[in-house]
Length: 319
Image 1 (cartoon, rainbow, N blue to C red):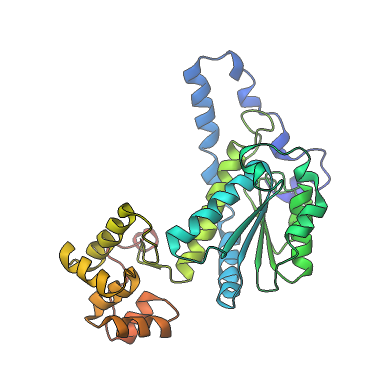
Image 2: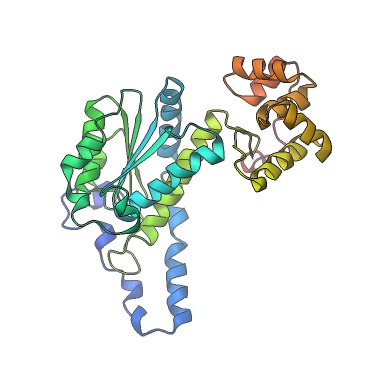
């Protein structure tokens, strides 16, 4: 929905409007209820696709900040905040970043992860306080379905005052706060199947946008090789098996050789990968990665081994 069709001062955000397609949901058979919900859910990726150009610009800007020492901060309330907590929590084990790389600030604190905390999202002081530790290199991402949660608004306003990069993830293109941030990712998911229940489409859209943001950011920062996670930390036996499988898939070597290389690399799968693809030693691979800023392809090029751009080609390449 274009801004011109909904003025910023409209009485209620689109996420709070009544959905004419689901007015009889309470009298339908269960299968029809589920079909209605599924039909509404199917519109979410389409809405998210429309914000991808803005998301791409945000990722590139965020990558520049991170390379200069910046960190990622999410600010949210309710469902939106819990989704942000999930994204922040999964980055360290998935991509090997420091535990403090991404912080999710949830209105109401840790208690609000499991239970609703009354009036927490209206606390502007708490939002401003949550943003008070940010630096000018940090990235502040507000997550609010309506784009109007006072906690989120105050956090983003203060983050902007401190010089941080600011963005709003919402499902309300007309959110006034969108005019005050550097980037507004507004996936227009429309009215919910249950009026105002933004844990449905708006929540799904927020999850997709944060998935895209954090994953693309990790790709830009060299935390992947091809489509494999090569900075993953093996915190259990299942993940250790996955590291070996990554090496087998990336190099074509047998499992025994991959286990040996991984041991020589001190369980650092990226070092083992560069070692095996360049036929170099662990110290040489580590040094090449250091000089390449952690980018595996650049390290391989520095060692005189340049692998093919991809094994199977991308959607874009085949289009």
